Amino acid sequence: MAKVDPALFVALGLNSDPNSPWCGRLDLGGARTVGTKRIASLRTMHQATQRFFKEAKVGDSITAEVMLKYAISYWKAVVITLPDQWENQRYHLLTKGIGVYAMMSLAGYLVRESWNEAITVDFFVAKLSDFVDHIDWSNHGPLEGFGGAKGADMAFKMILDIRKDAFRRMIQYG
Image (tube, rainbow, N blue to C red; front, top):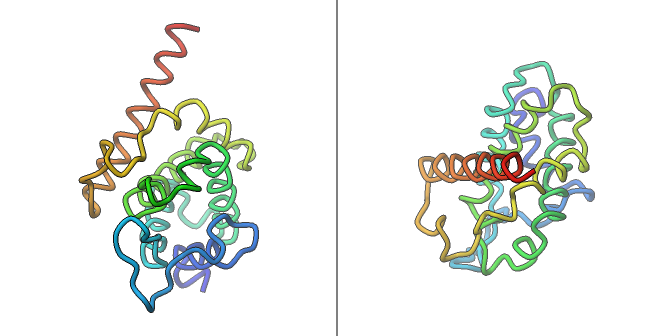
């Protein structure tokens, strides 16, 4: 499967690997959960992982197995840097469609930006901790009305803008 659909391989791996924060948490179908209690589905994670691959721009140079390792490391870093948003999913959009799409796009962007650094949990924590706490993931924050692919693109752009502003402040104020 890793060769046929690498994004699906990674999405399934995020749900099945015991090292993954998503292990056993993706909605695989069956009884529907609606509203704020809803969690990301396998389909959502598959589409988000396609965004991850697209942003990383790795082509065939990195295997799906390695990309799964990166994705697990990334989500571990997300749990470390956004513990309240991860734990209190009912009140935040981080683990819902728009958050998963935007964050997986960011993961790919950071992989592409790595410049041959070791891509580990520590790498992602260092990258995220500079700005990720400036993002309002609440259900009634700026991401509230975002939906679909266009909304995910807008959310990703907003995240990159917040990151750029955080770097600008660090440079300005040392």
